[in-house]
Length: 171
Image (tube, rainbow, N blue to C red; front, side):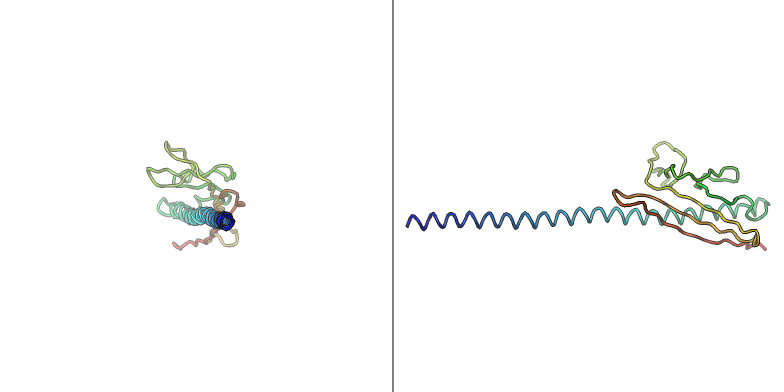
């Protein structure tokens, strides 16, 4: 009878070890899934933010182009061709050239992104290039590309590229 009790106790120990191994493997799988889920959540959030920033870049360029008509300037004369860093502080006298090393900053008081270093503004992972193309053969047309670049964690550099064509509607 003693042999049966010892054999049963050994069998219970093996069963507990197997159960712990299965539980550990299942828990590790759940943790890996959660880790990937949090990473992809950040990637998707950055993609959405970048899309809005690219759209905002197009709108800022449009506002600069539309600024010409009420001021009496020729249509499109304020926005030259080239690659720029435009934000809400842009005016006809200030279009810094894009260099790729200056990150957009987020100002929590105005809830705007820009390049100006306001107090309390936090640097982000995003850069925005506004590429303006003017075709000599069609002077009433301006093509604007807004390219937002960023990296999320170990993910390779990503970008969103939006393009819009503006026509001289005042003619």
